[in-house]
Length: 74
Length: 164
Image (cartoon, rainbow over all chains, first blue to last red; front, side, top):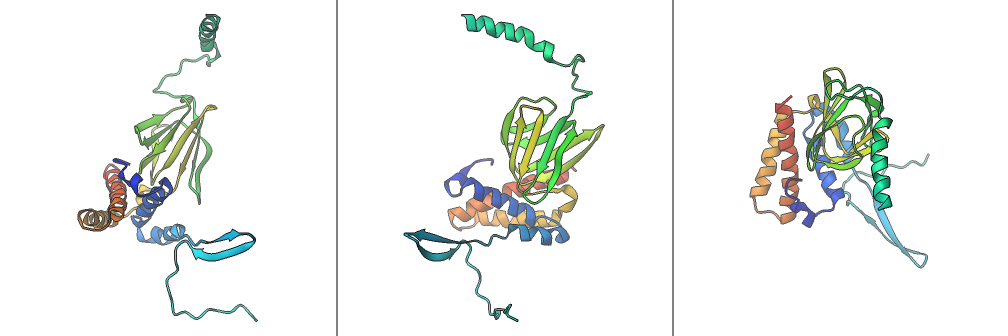
């Protein structure tokens, strides 16, 4: 927080997460693998109005993969 | 006028509530209860410690027992905990808040922390070079601001690792 120029672009929460991510990327290899999982955010939100749900929006869009979806049906 | 007189009587009475022994700074007999917690782990949980050194946004400071209540945002930097005697443990924290409560309790909430042995100096150097490259490049202002924040963290980390 030497010169808080980031306040023009980010919220404090985002700033916190950037610092945490920087710390995690500097760990030794063994520790880093465990720590990277903590940085993962998987969130979907949906705006409701008049009892109708709107479109479900990913906060962080997932990458498109070719993996076929597994089925839990027995 | 009466409130002023009341204030002075209160001030005269205050010293008698202190413990009988004089408190010297060299041999701090009192301890402060420290809770150093991360979202996923709690390093200290109401543990008695002698002194805690933190790097607050307003400057580095040391917190002893019976510190005045205050709330300090933390820079990415070291938190050093002196539990007893001359030994101390250090953690590098990414940022958070240190809160001294009125009842001799200290709560430090940080997002990420690791002891200095868990860091790889080569990774820090490489990351710092990458961040400086982005700052000097011609990306968007947001990318540059992000890189500046990361560069601050890496520089603080290098400084901490150098003074291990």
